[in-house]
Length: 419
Image (cartoon, rainbow, N blue to C red; front, top):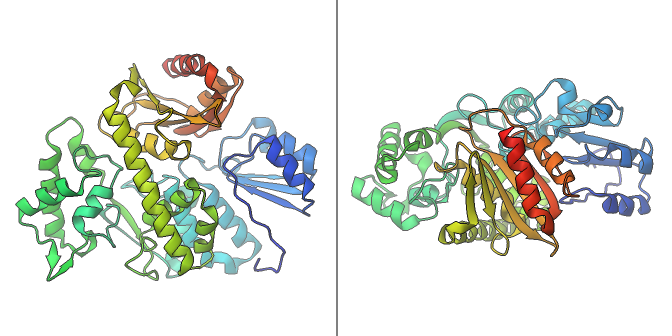
């Protein structure tokens, strides 16, 4: 757009042959695919010849890795699961075209955090993502420092911020503002400054330590509770040029806002925000974010009230969300369950109804999982064994399978994880 090109932008949840055929009929001069397409290089070549580019970070078949149309993190020595996402890949591609595009560096940081790639020391970004952080800092766009990482730390009253935080999932506190508020009132922590609610970011270091002690008492001495609370301290990335009373100021919250827009069929709103709209698009995004969080909480409450939907099979936990969990929200629901104390050492595989006859599959590896596993490969192989499709990263992957083959798929996944 900055170069004066006539650009059409489209978002799709999955790239399949039907979508590729539809794009061919629209007769564009050139096609750029980001964050998808790495497993369909052959189909793209036969359809578009050399008139396409795939900018991606997902695992890619060896026979396609060296092709000129493929710009993939793994080809450049970066782990696409934790060191480079499609946002940082697209950013450095843009900077290579024109160095002045470095003013977009903060969006690469948002994308990396939204993709949960903060796997470095103290929940920091690393690899190519860290290079984007450095560009953003050099441009005066970003400040980074260790702090408490509660959702809404800049914008929400303290008790609301704690209740909104789902990674890690704090049993008895996540999703329950009243329970958090009661625990904080008993502690004597000053929650208001006059008539104004205070935020996490306004607390002194001493008050933050006291807050952590209060939460530890509320969560109780369950196994892993101390570790879960410790994981709330990490690198915080702040955009000081953004309004302090919007979710855009904290890079992780910015990422959550974009994830909500993508999941709730409002991708265009998220794109408008990334392009600079801070009026109508932001208002619409805030409403979408509320609906997103409401949907996730409803799904988690439903699973909690129907424990038979969650089955443990050794290292694998199967979550049956059919008729309860919207397929658009399956990924974040499984991520939250994986961050809970109960499942942090498991592989969690969830399913939800999709288009009547199919199942959407989402899988995650808990942070404390003991052993090695490549979910991207497992999802691909298990799905293909039941006439479905699958793939992704080693720690997070998904699939689409026929509903009638669910039992066979679950068995194939369990066998491969155990193996």
